[in-house]
Each structure stands twice: as structure tokens, then as C-alpha cells.
Amino acid sequence: MRLLPWLLAFALVACAHGGGQPSPPAVIVPAAMIVPQRALPSNPPALPGPAVDIREIDAPAFAPDQGHIAVHLPAGYDPAGVRRYPVLYLNDGQDAEAVALQPTLARLQGQGLIVPAIGVAIHMLPDRRGTYGLSDRAAGRSVAADTRHGRVGARAHEYSEWVAKTLVPYVDAHYRTVDAPSSRAVLGWSLGALNAFNLGWQYPELFGRVGAFSPSLWLSSEQGDANAVERSRLAQAMVASSKPRSGLKMFFAVGSAEETDDRDGDGIIDAIDDTRDLILGSGSMAAPGMRGLLQLGYSVNLDHARRPTQDDVALLLLDGGQHNQASWARMLPAFLQWAHGRQAPTAVP
Image (cartoon, rainbow, N blue to C red; front, top):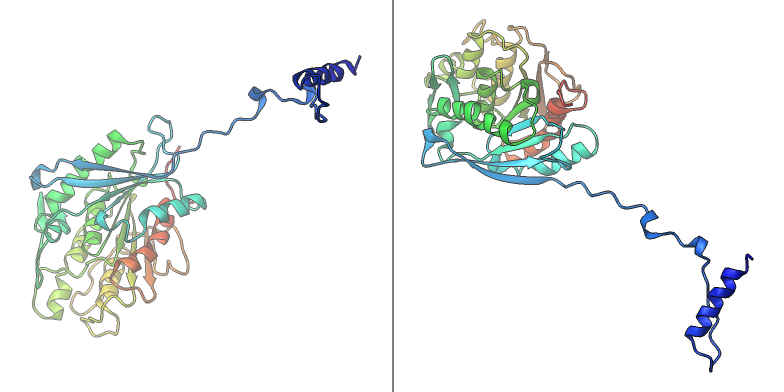
């Protein structure tokens, strides 16, 4: 009986070749060895890769200009899914490609070093010098500075209000975000870093993480000699006169070769001195006893490059780092791991 299927199959093949000429030998596969198509394992659907969503957001205070944002979505992002993601807001978002934002996010996520996050790159408005600066939220005004380059921060309050009250609610309404300050970071460099710090300091209920690369902390209300500048620096004075912001964490990064200016002649460039004074307070003759973040009770790590921690305030000194996009790209991985690392207190379901 076991030979019957074989003989039947052989007969069918012979009939198909006709009766006149001998048939070539046929290779017959028993039916028991044929796997039905439906039983083959199907390939799982591929997760969508990283995508960039471009949006124009109304900004009435700057009309006719609008806010232009590029939303970088992580691989596997599903607008109809249940997962929610932390968000990184980025001043000077037009530099996102130059600082390798998308590939850095993808690489660190792929290596499991950070949780998947949404990046919102905010392209600068035409008046960059006017919008990136400090503000006094309680007084409803900008805190501007006159410099040799012109007036800086004259419209910082309007810009900061737009980010806090228009852009953040828009992003939360249109994307699957985690609506918590510990999962919302803001980053910038140079003047954009000054404003990123301002956003965290003035709106701590929104932004729980701040990244400031090469921050412009030299802005002052007086333009006299070096002592006048030192004692009237705006960001340092803002911290010295404030109460601590509960839950706010700050990451500062400065290059060792950003400049050659050394206002107080101590052998340390101003970019580093200004950042350290904001963190540690100023003990100089020009500004004795000016409180910094340390005096407000924040835990501080001044050597994040060699000893990464999750202290409230981190300072990364980039050896050879300059005031340019290439150096900010080198600072970015350390910041992302600090802000959105697997060990960071980031609330993601």
C-alpha cells in the first residue's frame, strides 16, 4: 500500500510525456513532504524607520513669520499606538543636520543607551539675536543686554512664551509624548543655549532637563571695564536672586578652545569662567558672594567627561572643543545619555 502513491505519480508523469518516446527520469516529491503555503512562517511587518515631520506653527507675536519645526520621530513610532515618548526641544533647529541629531538619536537608541525620544528642532526666527536671550516671566518682560554686536534678547520673553504656551501644547496634542517635565528637555548652543537655560529656569513645570552647549553667559547689564561686566552678568544675577527650581536638572558643556578672552586674567577663558560662576557662585573681587546653583542646593558634578553621574548639575569640559557645530556634535551623545539615558529618571511607559 505504501508504494501506491509513488506508482500513481509515476503514471501521471509518463502520461504527460506521451507514449512514443521514453521519458527522462522524473524526481517525485512525496506529498507528505510538501508543506502547504499557509504553513510557511510569514515575515513580521517592518517597523517604520526614523521620520521627520515638518510643521509651520503660528506665532502671532512675530507675524508674518511663523515657527518652523522639524519633528524627528524615532524608529517604530506609531501614531495610533499606546507607547509615549520623552521629547527633546532644540533651539537653532536649522543646525540639526550639522550636529548629527537624527543619526545620534538613532545610534544611541539602537545601542540601548537611551530610551527612544522625539526630537523637536525649532528653526530660528529671522531675528535670532532678539529672540534668544533671557526673560523675567513674573514681570512679563525680556531681560536684554547691549553688546558690541547689538542688543541681545529684546524679544526673548515673547519667544519663550511662544515655546511654552503654544509650541509645547501643540506637540503634546499632535504626538505621543509623555506630558511630564522630567521627560521634556530643551537644548541649545551659544545664544540658543542661553535661551534654553532661560526656558528651564522660567518654566520648570514644563522643562525638567536643560542642555546648554557653549552658553552665552557673558551678557551683562554694564559695558564698562572687566569688573563692571563681571559683577553685572545677567544669567548669574538671575540665579543669585532666585529660589531653586524643584526637579530641574542642567547640563553644561564648554570647549577648552572656545576663545582666548580672559576677562579677569586668571588663565581660564571666559566661556569656562562664566559657566563655573553660574554653577559655583562667584568669589571674585568684582562679584563677591554671588550665589550660584551650588548655593541654591543643587548637587554638582564638575567633571562629567570623566565621571558621568546623574547629579542635578553636570559640567562637561570638551578638550579642544571650539565654538562651532562640530564640537556641539561631539557634546551631543553625552547630553542625550544624561537626559534620556536608560538610567535617567525619564518616565516612559
